Length: 119
Image (cartoon, rainbow, N blue to C red; front, side, top):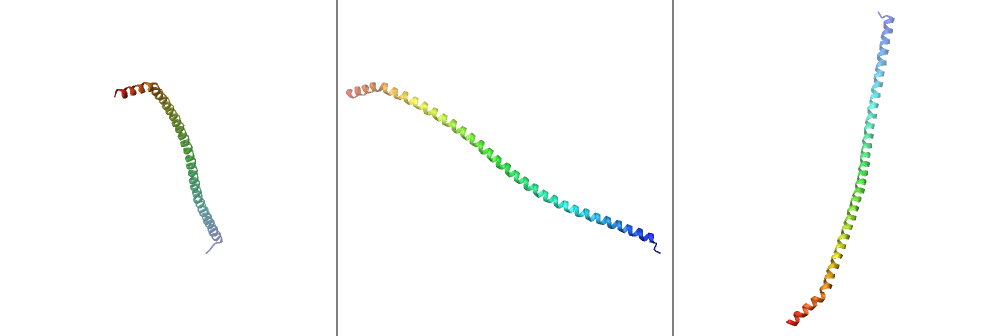
């Protein structure tokens, strides 16, 4: 025989089970949604990281280029100064040689004339 209290208890138990199942389904849907959002966030982070890497690489290249220009310009200035110094030293030596030639020219001419006359 079915008793009304048993039917009510059975109905309440089924109602609780159904509620629990619905809650579990809702939790599962929430987990799926969260997993999807986490996947999207991972993609966004990956894209952002790549963008940041590219930006940093470009900034590093710019800094390296500027530093290289500074080094090249400093080397160029040093080489220009050194070449000017060498040119100045060459001019001094040329002046000294020209002075020696001028000082010895008359004596050299006399010596040559003397040799020609003896021959």
